[in-house]
Length: 322
Length: 293
Image 1 (tube, rainbow over the protein chains, first blue to last red):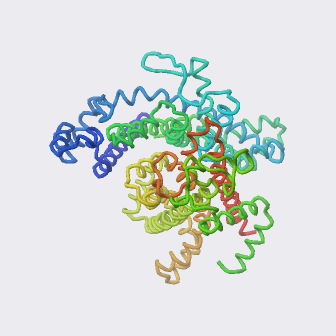
Image 2 (cartoon, chains in turn red, brown; image 1 turned 180 degrees about the vertical axis):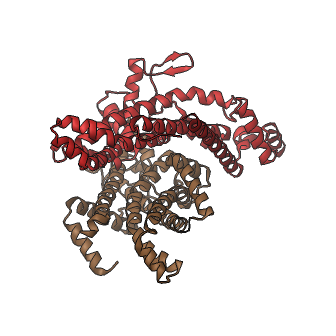
Image 3 (cartoon, one colour; image 1 turned 120 degrees about the horizontal axis):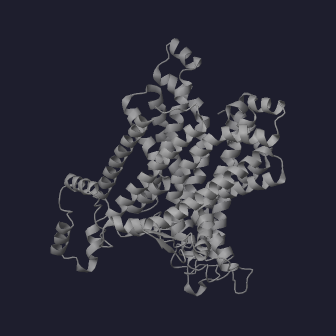
């Protein structure tokens, strides 16, 4: 087990090095951050050259990359060209907003997706099942930004029930600014979280349903039924447990997808998280922020993948990592 | 595919109401997108015909609506219905471009790396696996947002750069499974060349999963293009796009100008649902179990 964990850790570090290298290479050819920093109106050749020298952008590519890695290992991730502050600080203060949004959304997706997916498999011909399936087709056919706008239109503009932008009142616990502890913060979270989870929820319902239908047609289910086990026990102890493995893989993948789509949701709801930071950094060619953002996403995804693998071995004793 | 096979599929389509509805919507969209300059009431991208006096008109059946602006107008006085028709054309062009490019390249790579299991192919697949773990939308935003945007080309390239992976993985695993089955060994035993085995035996067997994936992907790519354009990193402002129209409308929903978002959004959802219904049906029809019976 320990050897396995160490190997995974090694792989993760390799991935991060590869990702950072690719990012660096891409930025070598795209966008000129010098112009973004000094602005076009002051750009005489001398000023541009001096700014390039100050930012270290006149050095060869491999020197820049090596110095980035060297400083990153000492905890220094560079400075944002636009915010004129350490990139680490800029990213860290945005993390809570995004992680809270994504975590709440994945919980909604997992809970509703598993429950309703199971229900539609157990009662396939029921009216409720059919409405759930119809909703799920609508769900996988509506882009996240559009569902967000429609939610705003109905619940914020027409009905005026819920706020449509920002995080509302937040509380600060140490370094973590949370919106989960105030009523106002929770009210602000409802629409963005629903918008972010709708697509993935619809996907989960369909996948869990398919998986569950497959499992329920297996012989051991018939055996369990014929030995007189109660229906709900058959479904939960024998059905769900076997259908849960693929479902967990899917949820793990979805966490990454949701991190990606949080960029969209945050733009629609003006949510002050990492996604909006990324979009504004792309507009202003703030490359250090973009690189560190991507590295952060890579780390989160690596951790989630590890958790998924460990959950596997907990759920299925046949799986042993060595 | 022979004529009889196509006729058979069409007959099956007629027997499936939801797929039939999807196919009809798809036909209407295809028709109006192909003939956009003749079907659309106005040309919203011709600056000489639009007038700011027609700015933000509501739909025809509302107080203040006027002809020919059936679904109302946007801030610049452009007809929403025409914007939708031209936008759908871009949606279709981008998605068909991506699916054919990613499908061909990814399919070919999957075929070769699955058949030969060589080092280069293996290495490319490892890189693909790595890229696959990353959220597709993030890569698309980065590639498309950082590229020079001229025409729809960069968007098609940016999305294809991610989506070929799905085809390569699917086809590779299919080939890995197929090539150990007797019919391939039999073909090899009678002296068929690699090229013949690949083109006559493996390709036909890989087509059904490729087609199903392509059908689903057309829907996914349409949504992705709209999302990128909504975020301002998709097609440039000179190209028609539903995502952009909706982004412009976003600024007016607080003011109750709902038609700027609801109609283009509705058209987008209708198109994607139609494709998904047809894709669902295609998956059922092309699954091996059904084909045997």
